[in-house]
Amino acid sequence: MKCGLASATLPVVSELLVSSEPAQAQTNAEASFAAIPGQKGVQDVFGAYDVDPNWPQPLSSLPGNEQWNWGSGEGVFAENPDRVFILQRGELPNIKRPKEIDLPQLGPSLGFPIGRLPWRDATSASPPGQLDGPNHGTENVDWRWQNCIVGVNAKGEIKETWPEWDSMLRRPHAIYINPYDKDKYVWLVDDYRHAIFKFTHDMKKLVQTIGTPNQMGADATHFSRPTYLAWLPDSTMFVADGYVGTRVAKFDKDGKFISDWGMKGTPPNETRPGYLNGVHGVAVDVPSGRVFVNDRYNHRVQVFDTNGKFLNMWKVGDPPSDVHCLHLSAADRHLWLFDRGTNKMIKYDLEGNFLYSWGTFGDFPGGFWGVHGMHVDQEGNLYVAEVDNGRAQKYVPRKGANPAMLIGPGVKPVWS
Image 1 (cartoon, rainbow, N blue to C red):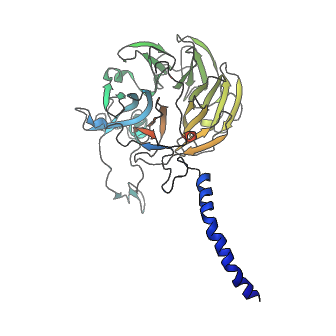
Image 2 (cartoon, rainbow, N blue to C red; image 1 turned 180 degrees about the vertical axis):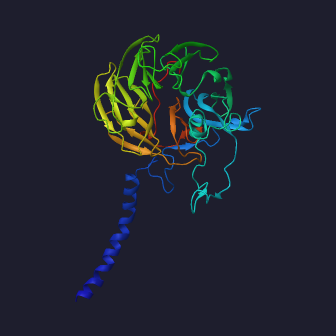
Image 3 (cartoon, one colour; image 1 turned 30 degrees about the horizontal axis):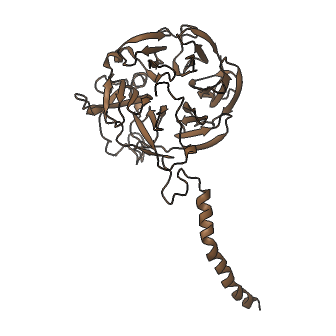
């Protein structure tokens, strides 16, 4: 009887399974966590973006520069989609990927390069990383200190270079235009010179220097390897200071020192509010008057008001987590960070709740290795500069992408 009952019920069970499949498939599509809702197949390898593999064109395309290409990518800033500044630490030899060889002199079963892994670390090979390392290299053989600032259009064509400023730079770190400045002065931070330089919009004239070049300090006229900048609508400026410094410095619209805050902590497990180590990023949420600071060596974000009063903090992860830069999307008010240790773009709300991440390691188009600068233009294109890969990249939003997975632009500039 038991066997008969089982055989009698099998068709009913089978019929139920068949009839439920379309509904189940529809439920899965609606619930899928994908950049393009309901997409079938493929993967979100590059999040909600397609990478433009031909942007920018090789630096070797410049006449007379055939033997050289991009060095360590430090910063990137899009004035608009057709004028993008790329900041780098000189140039590296324009060579192809080496053929794999065995290296028994280093150990058994060792070889180089390995599979699809990157084969040259641009930040170690480019000055001053090269100069500070065990192999100092030879100028004009291992590296060349030229084309530190390059202007590129929407197609990736190199339209502007400023060789007249190369000799004054030692370690160019970040480049900006204050979004509230109708005159569009260009700001450049050089952390090894402990100074911030302000240029005319065409970059033909240096009009102001903040800090004392080549002198380290922590007062109204000195920095200790400053890193990044952010502004309020009245052009009050915040300086992340810095690799050695342990403070945020505040200046008025004319570059006059107002105040600073921050004390030297004990990395990597400092938990006290207001203690900083590796001040390597700053962003401002104007509606709430909050200043977000990347406390890099303590693996956390700290939040202050515009006068330096502590408000909040959160961890971004234990090592290998190593956040390099942060970006505040102004319209939807979220904070995006790039983590060099995990090669991920990370999205938080402004209270520190983790929402989303994307990114993959590699030196192929779209892969990440050492994003040190990031910016989003008025059309939503994302640009990154990579210290390790030695390049800049452009990511274009995918058609139909979920807006929540896109990195929104910062404050809408007054000139757009």
